[in-house]
Length: 289
Image (cartoon, rainbow, N blue to C red; front, top):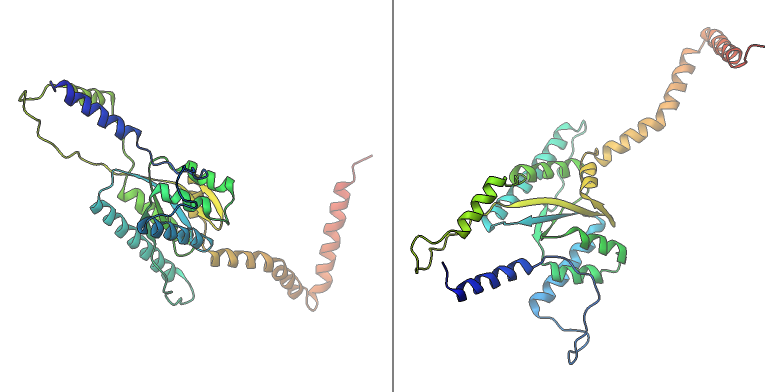
């Protein structure tokens, strides 16, 4: 068993770790007596603040996907960034291959994944004027753990869908522990050390990273996680435009086809057919006496 003072230190450290929070606060700053107003921050905090403001400003054209992460190491984070870039490139090449018209590749910035400092991001979110208070509070309420932002160059639903599938493939959802596994971990933590009186050997814990989409900010609108999935399943903007043009030109095309069929000697028969169909419709609409 550990000495009393060691157990107290361990419990105090555990309480500190449990008390740590990653929540985003958009409340007004606290005014301290004797502190100058407005507060002056250091170089690093000022740089991060201005950087986060620029990220929010880019949301008018570049969608921002909000991610919650946990237990990520630096190598796994580098691997995740590579998977995002590869998924984006594959989606772009697939769209170019499926297009009936040759498309010149556009020179755009690749998707960017940034791990955020929640305290400084909360200040930037509060000070960003284009977003009202309700929107900022909605964004702040989404984050409960580690916070990251995925910036996309443009709103491209197939590209977004490919990136989301790459995230699920690279960081699969963590399976919940069974009752037996929880009991086993608790027994291992409460067990006496193998060599009493000697400090146990420190073992590095095995980190299983977790990642999930909690929302997005697209063109000034806040979307929840299910809404982000719905947006990723939409077609591209060019496809939607082609569908709208097709719907608008469909009546004119049908009228032109009828007029072409009714040219020459077919005009009389076409008009007679229309007259007969109208008479039958009127007779069917009038109820019998």
